[in-house]
Image 1 (cartoon, rainbow, N blue to C red):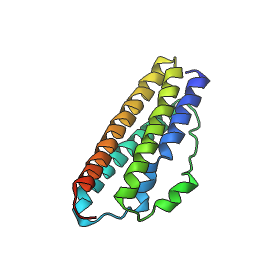
Image 2: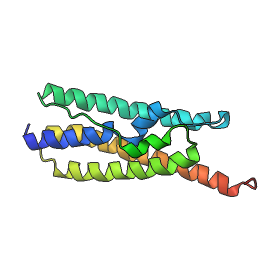
Image 3: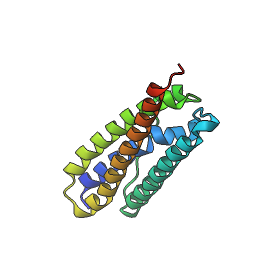
Image 4: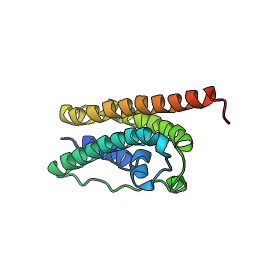
Length: 149
């Protein structure tokens, strides 16, 4: 596999491993009992993303590449114990950024094996973006229709 393809996959790994969804897996968002189903949905997305990270990590190791370490952006540290009204728009924006970056990287991949690893990740990112947008829209719509402010 060409070294450029390994670099591209490593970039995708770094982006994914330091995602806002992964950070929130340990940040403990504040969620009332009435919104546990929404939190459960976010946890399912986070778990699917974590599995993709492990799979990509293992792939790079098998190719004798050194997977990059990742760090969460410092601005994520302000997101502990905040409500979903605050988190969901940020999750949507971050996921959109993740999709955009991965689309650019996948477009650069000419190696068939690397593309076969990268495309499912991009597809997952797109599915997660759609799910997060729906969660955000559903919550915004419900709040907008409410007479309680």
